[in-house]
Image (cartoon, rainbow, N blue to C red; front, side):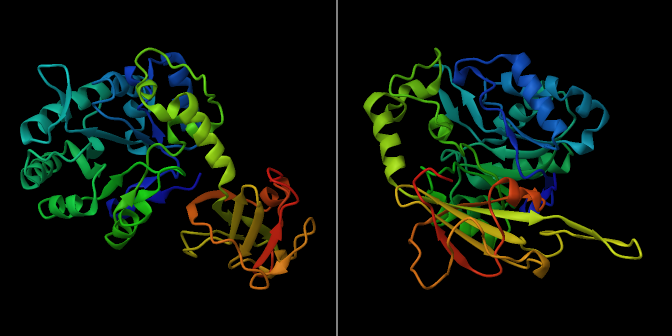
Length: 365
């Protein structure tokens, strides 16, 4: 798995991060053996980026993650990126409150270090904006902890551009973790452009809408005691059924950026390898899928070697422009590493130029 650079932080992280909110009572409890197996499997597959938070069970998630990664954390600490969050506490009435005061951030960081069993945090994030604490005080406290070596990079979660601006006056914000899914795309309007302009790394939470997009829920869905989703109408009865109906009726466009690894051997046995993104700064191939009642598939090639350029053989194609493409908003660009066999295995073909093909029936892709 090829790593990517997380914005201005310079952190080299796997394109997929392992989130651990579910390793807490908020999701109705969890099986730690299964969680440990999943975390270790992720490491075997090249995932090096793990996100947790003090508020995820107030130490429960962090302790479970620390135990699962114990061998890495003890012997290969520089190979694992640990992100956690602070700035949430439980008040005297048992309610969760936002608190980014210097005292609580410092206290919370100490507890996170102990729970994870580490000497420093790679990326420490303010979990939510706290309107009762001046951002300057929060920023000063974060910078002091960076200077002390207890944390290395500073980020935020659930912040807007104005709040990031204000905090950055005291301590630059390097990353943002917002919610983002097909059903929740508000950040496309201002937050994502802002982060791109200011070189702020973005990694999201809830990409499958907390289970709504997994296709495993039904109108009679039952949740374990304590699962926060049980309190929300969109996860129950008619609202859940209506949500699935609306999703099925609305075409959605998804872009996949494929980075081809092409190897060849010349007569002199010299081997060259085409690699993308890090050198070319753009993918070799971009495929766009549109799912829905008027299902269509669109594909374009970019910087694709001419030896691989050919028209799709499975479906009729037309040069883009002879038929106006549906004006569906792009969902999100996701990237992966692949080789030419990926296209064949997926029933797809690279094209020499822009083309569009129409699916014979919904759901056929």
